[in-house]
Image (cartoon, rainbow, N blue to C red; front, side):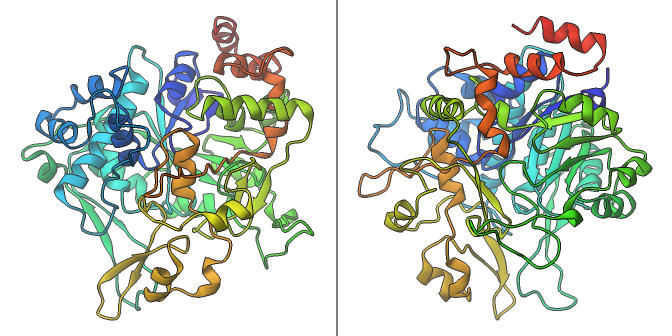
Length: 489
């Protein structure tokens, strides 16, 4: 079975929700485990400052091919026994058009660590999920993942037409470039990010395996454009519906809101599966496909299988804080859980699904009381200054700072610090100068209302194996997949 034959792709969610433990578990059970590639430098350095108590990060760092780089990261961030609970986390520098050598090293090493740990001890495939909207760390992150042998790269939230060619060049040890979207760029101006493996390694870089590339899309029009116009081969597509968690593609046409304030999706937003089939490339369906029978339905429509996120997000192996998972499962069982698709929350401007949680960023009073801060910077937008240089701004940063950078006041309305909120959700939140802890921001797809179905009636927890067993038992899949699922416990 090849990597593109796996019928279930585990979603690459949030900041360290889909961490190496979850991805490794799913892969060992015969399907495609996927790690989130978001904010990996912040994830690694936070884990080291918390003491890396099980030694996992240090074990992976010891296998990085450039020991001096790993040693510098340990010197700068490792705290034996862990930092005091009231002490803030030291965040690494934010990505920019001209990152320091130390930051580039950290980006590469952090991606290597996550993929190394996910692949450790088994031969199953591992993928990494990235957002096209987050462009500045992309090339170093891809290279670090490839050094560790990543099998698949998945990318959505934009038009990733330069990624397939970048993968080709990095695999050959050649310098790769991607264009960077810069607000206010003038006609003819082009901003480019470049990564050179030879420069990074200080010598002849190794030849690496080229991972398969799956574009996450919501329309056949975009998929057709990527298939024809990308600078390299697109191996397949994940077709994501608006019920999926995290960021959603905006509805086509003028934005219309429901009485509750959510974007309204219509017939134009339903993907044309016949057009996808005509492309002749494998595809998977995502968005409420974690329900029994949906895998069989997807395969009947011509899909290889499905991508499932929410069900895995609340299993034991995911990175979400355990009590938050247990409470979500209890609320799901009680029938009082509904996701809100917030058109304003994300600084990207994409709709973003938010799970209501008491004391979290889902509550307006919590957001208003929180002092705005931007110290992760994952969703900052590059913009052109008057002198042609590039600056960085985020509508969720302090309002005065955003306005000084040329941003509009209306763009700050309702914005949430997604970076810090997602980090807090997995126990890597910041401690502010007044001793307060960053509130969580929990995201999930519409299927969160049903996650209790994966747990036994008397339990508020379930495993990734429980998810796979339920999905595969109700589907017409290969006998080998059934065998693996049966041995999953």
